Image 1: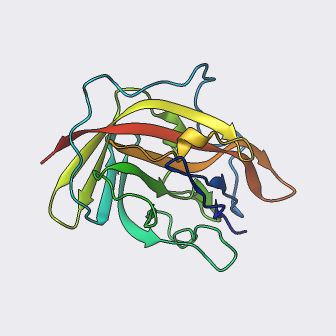
Image 2: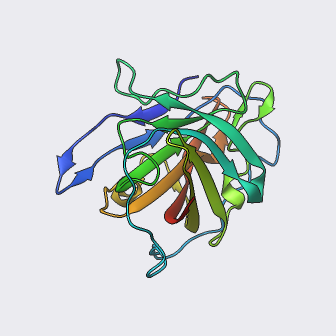
Length: 205
């Protein structure tokens, strides 16, 4: 099955409007991938924690220590139907950076995407729903800098109900990491929603 981010791009009030659906034909474990706990009101980035924006530089690697992610990044764009291309489904340890958004560490909202599973089993972002506020995400950039983002919220949404703030552009360096989530749907071989991790830049070296 395909997956992608619908390219309903609209530059309205400084925001990029996108809707995300991800589906894979996968060997689905009975218990499914980890899901975030139910969330209430939206969380805000830690006050005073974010660093000043960096210059643009493409990312090459992502590490998420809390869930054992250590994976290369590939640039992904839009296919002819207006969906964000996924990394190759058969490569389980590969994530994508959406090149039409900000680069990690630059001003704005950078977006990383990846499969939760594939025909062989768990894939790169299988454990994404286990992340909690305070966990870190490290991204290596082609300029040699390694930037650290600190998680401040993890949520799961139905795929047709993603809030605008998932993709809203900001003047501070933000990161979203997104994969499939919600209920598994045997009829489609996909998932009903998306897990979204919100993080803000807190380190660069």
